[in-house]
Image (cartoon, rainbow, N blue to C red; front, side):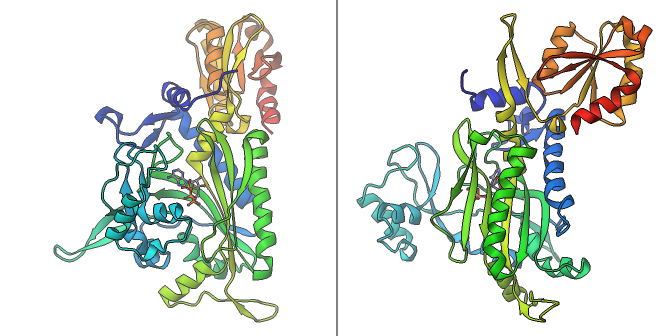
Length: 456
Ligand code: ATP
């Protein structure tokens, strides 16, 4: 079978109402995407599944929904404001942007102290050593510029004065700064976690590849606060739980998933690992698990002047908890889920069908109600109304029944319910299974329970 390409997935998403290019009628707006009627259902189902697994089913995890706009001091404590000065240069040929000091470090195998070099020195070194673009191999650089990784906006103060405000580039700071609030109000004992799903904004150096890297995206992540001695076991635990989630709950194929442990760590980190997925563009990060030590709470303690110390209720000892972070992009997981589920199958009669083999719980529609002919619409509408309260359903009465089956195979609807003339006599319907294409006859009164049992 031919390998799926990113272009195929982009076209599929656009044609089937999953994802549209952002601001399309104005010629688009680079690296922004709008989720359509089916996309928003799939994405919501993914987020719900994540929240159920990591928050609802874990008594020691508490949810928050923090503000996107935060006190700018938060971004000083996190180190983001300082990195504004990073020296960046663009390859004029492939338009990719790189940190000049990283280019020098990599070329010199860390034998040159690039961090301490001025922009002029960096440019001279790159020129004299003939350092080429790691992406396309050309050597045609712009001069070095400062690049701001955070989007800024401003808040009007008195008169014409304005305060610079940042759109958060990561959601996790909302959990760190609420550590004490959550601990106190929920009477939480370490170890416990704070979780959040929300939007982040990044002025990415190299955005692209559809939803893989965008400038506005959603993160689903949690921060587990634990004692130092529990740090590594907790890290290992989340490595396993993160993999189990994408495999068992989302349904990604095991052979398209792998761990990627980091060799190079941030100076404060004790361990870091990604789970990679085999996207059409190759193996790429799907999520990250990081052992961050006491870095985040200590920085907020320092910058806010507020104590972040937790008092152990048994020993009365005051500690700054270690943090294990687990973070996954909802949009990136959405993309992986679609790429994994999209299949082209040869049928016995020689025809082919596209079928989206989503886990039924994730499918945008759970049931499609299909009257065989328009004069069966009244009965079909009754059936539709009875199911609609329980499941997201579609009513489809246009085209041949075969075409309607194909249409729903393609968008992943697990069950098609056909109303035919016998339905008027025996109050039964035909239920067709998306994957096996088998059909069974079910009494209308048993239909809801039948679908529910199958979904569970
Ligand atoms: P990458 O190395 O791909 O840039 P990262 O290490 O910067 O990712 P984190 O900051 O750890 O990523 O963010 C956690 C998760 O958020 C990532 O694993 C990814 O799923 C998602 N994510 C990060 N940046 C983007 C983006 N620009 N667009 C879409 N999803 C993203």
